Amino acid sequence: MTVKESLMIPSFYKLKEEVQYELTQHILPFWMERMVDGQHGGYFGRMNGQNELVQQAPKGAILNARILWTFSAAARHLGPLQIRPFVDRARDYIFDHFFDETHGGTYWMLNADGSPADTKKQVYSQAFFIYALVEYYRLTGDKASLDKAVELFELIEKYSFDSGKNGYLEAFDRRWNLLEDLRLSEKDANEKKTMNTHLHVLEAYTNLYRVYRTPLLARQLRNLILLFLEKIIQPQTHHLDLFFDENWVCRSSLISYGHDIEASWLLLEAAEMLGDEDLLTMVREESVRMAEAAFEGVQPDGSIINERDSVSGHVDDNRDWWPQAEAMVGFFNAWRLSGDERYSRSVLQGWSFIRTKLIDADTGEWFWSVSSQGMPDRINDKAGFWKCPYHNGRMCLELLERIQQLK
Image 1 (spheres, helix red, strand yellow):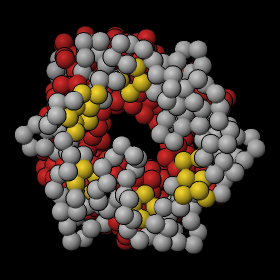
Image 2 (tube, rainbow, N blue to C red):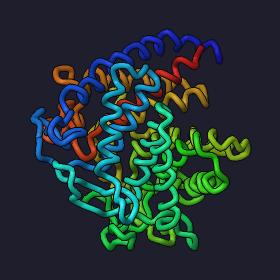
Image 3 (cartoon, helix red, strand yellow):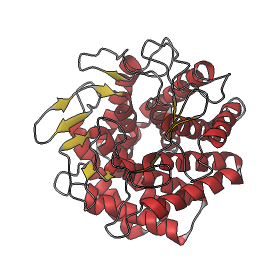
Image 4 (cartoon, rainbow, N blue to C red):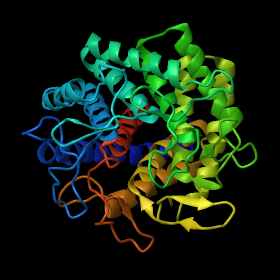
């Protein structure tokens, strides 16, 4: 550590105290106190932007998997005494309702009463259940959770992996037949391969490899890293391409700054888990280049905008919650790799933006987004299918651990 880097430590120790307070006093209590479904089990599926609970809202796979991951990770880091009942609630609900015991895999969506509402097998969703179940296993040693995570890994490899052209296909019906409509959401392009699914399969396989080290998993995790280096990251700009056909021809001109910076640190984590020094050297260098590409989206107030279309020039300058959280981790990671003070300053400025603009100090959790004029979004969900405690909760946990390592 250089003298300049050491001068940042007092500021980061203060940041550590503040993000721990945010996690333990705002984010987790919101979900524990306001989102528990006492009638049907698990957690409610939605609270709107006016903080009104929608008790009959469907319950999404992504929301439930991310709740399980967040509470499991928080209990593992902070101690399980107060959090553990909420972890077990999430795990039990998933086991009771989300698994398709006939055809394997997990459902995309349930009705409020826990009955299946959408039985498709979105690979993105299967990956998040792996990620969450492994984290629960790391906390509890529950073998049934690890067994289910391994089962999902094997299903992804059996049905989704494209052994001829490489990569993972997006979505299947209940019986694992490839769907015509492959999209995660209406805003996505209907293409057979996406950066987003590959990123979260990589994230899931990285966590699984911590506790389940087989040659197949090691080979497929390495393959995912190489897919990013060779197919998904643009070699000239170091931004991510987002959508591809089955032959890896890019079908999108969008730049997602949040995904750029999120992938920059998740790729490094995956390479570190494998421990291949040659691969790790390549990924370290690329991680900094990706952070620099994402830095194009950083604004003078420390926030990071959502997207830019590289062809039309159109810019989505809203500041959604999740890119702000990922930027905190990604730029901290880039600072540790490079020593570049722009990244460390960006972390502190980004936290100032989050603390003053994005956190809902009155009711807990974060707003969906903040406009370029600084106005919080009170229309989109406070909690819902996509609005979960995962990005902001993980940000807090990652920073707590990374700042502790500065000693």
